[in-house]
Structures are given as C-alpha cells and as structure tokens.
Length: 100
View (spheres, rainbow, N blue to C red):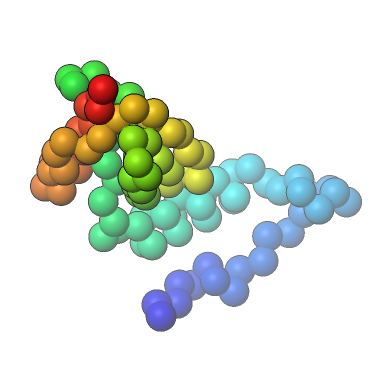
C-alpha cells in the first residue's frame, strides 16, 4: 500500500469545535491527496444520448433496468429504465439509453 506524507498529518481545529478547520489548509490537503491518490483513476462522464447527465463517476452498477452511479465525492444517482450501451475508457465516456 502506498503511503503519502499527509497520512500522518493531523488537522488542528481553528477553534474549540472539532469540525471547524482552516479551510485553506483543508482544501489544499484534499486537493493534493486527490491528485496523488486518483492520478491513475478514470472518472467517467455519463451521457444519455448526446446529453451529459452526470460527471466524475468512479462507480457504476447495473441492476435489472437501473444504472446506479457514484461520483468521486460519494454522491450517487440512479437512472431508472436505462441500460449501458457504450463504455469508452480512452475518452472516459459512458453512454446509457432508455431500456423501454
């Protein structure tokens, strides 16, 4: 497992509240860690026909006539009555279409 310099870095709270951090330091750490950790990861753009319907997708699952997708931040969406018709890894493009 690859270990990064930030794995042992502790974020110090700005005030007495545990969840209030210096936003610049937090943002830098998250951006930097993302660039190191995800440098080899594909992030797909989901198209319904020619229209972009979702971006930065790292997880896709098909169940019956539903396509479940999740983005890099963990947000998810379900496309009902759809199926995958094309996956283009080189272009990081995944195309879905109505299954009805």
